[in-house]
Length: 247
Image: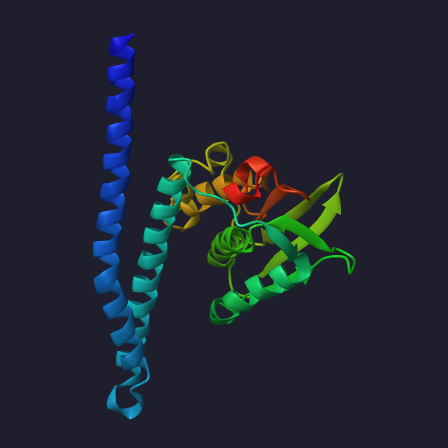
């Protein structure tokens, strides 16, 4: 019994050390990244003081730094979920507004890639109980993934529908699809890199969906695009909600 207690204590200590390490390293990385992003944006807006090619290089630096900053946030979020320390701030979320806001955040990147974005949902889609920020985060990852995999003149569709006590949020693309040997592991950490992402985004989509008491599914055939569907209960499980909301 003493040995088990000592082992449990050692594991808990190791987990705390890991979280502290991840948090400290992430903070140290974000500080210079903020400076890099700021100066690259300044260079992009420098007008005639910088050549067109130079502005293109500055934009590439900004884009890479922004992606790295988002990846750092993903690592922190995943560490928080692993430690069972992420609580949901549950509220009523209007599904149509949530979809429109998600598309708005990715319109510029879609236009730059010559990809059309489409929103589909019934007029009476209504609301869902959930964490608006976290739901938006999982949609961001799915849209980013879809846009990057869709060739020019392709289409990305974000949809929502209500069925059997759940809201289904769906993102589909007309891209290259996912090889069959990858599909079974697509939500594993760092496996998603074969879809062109950092490898953690789809794992985070799965974790955030499950935190809401739901599950996520994939449908894809190589060369025929991919569809990710998040099945979310209309009422989020209170066990995942913020502590003060629990009864």
